[in-house]
Image (cartoon, rainbow, N blue to C red; front, side, top):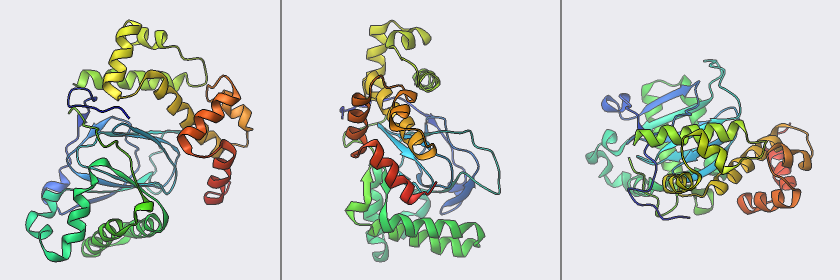
Length: 299
């Protein structure tokens, strides 16, 4: 992972969350999935209810699916790239979201002895965390109860959720952001990276040449290569391969296409390179990834 400084990371749009100015925390069932690269000083607890795709959190690109549970640290830029546009159905939201800050909870409250474990946990969340295992299952159950609860019940549930996350064993927590990542909080660069991201996704199944993308946003190839590495911490080819692996994950979960068909549909030019890139990023072969996903999400 490339070490980033305050001048080498992409700047994101600042989102203002007004609810946390007057409440201990905010809870909502969101019909949208946040495709804009943004940040805010509040901490997010995000539970995906439907759709697949990928998230970009700091300098991490990862997959999302129903049940994905992410705690996004304060001021860590993030965005989602769902495989399908949200349908906007309020009866069937895309995700459940809890937002809060140490300031909204209050320093006096957090200083109480009963809050010691949660306080220490919150201090460790700057890298953002994806949860798995029993902790993820328990928090999913609790968050799904919150839409039917009154304000007092939600507050109690919120504290139980924090306690569950703070108590989760290390093997059920995966830090998402590299230890040296430091977000630079230039709107112009955000828009350029969004253009690059959208162009890559539109052309993911085809050959993608750095020269074509550079021309698309008005750069020379050499300048674009430097710009991209400076603002994402990754080389252009690393980024493309990560997105292609993400697309392959989606196809493995959602289709019955063969591994070879998915290899070419996601833009890889040969099967051996696809298998190598996939296993390097996911830790398992494409075939094993499909088996594991279908055990969890039967097709």
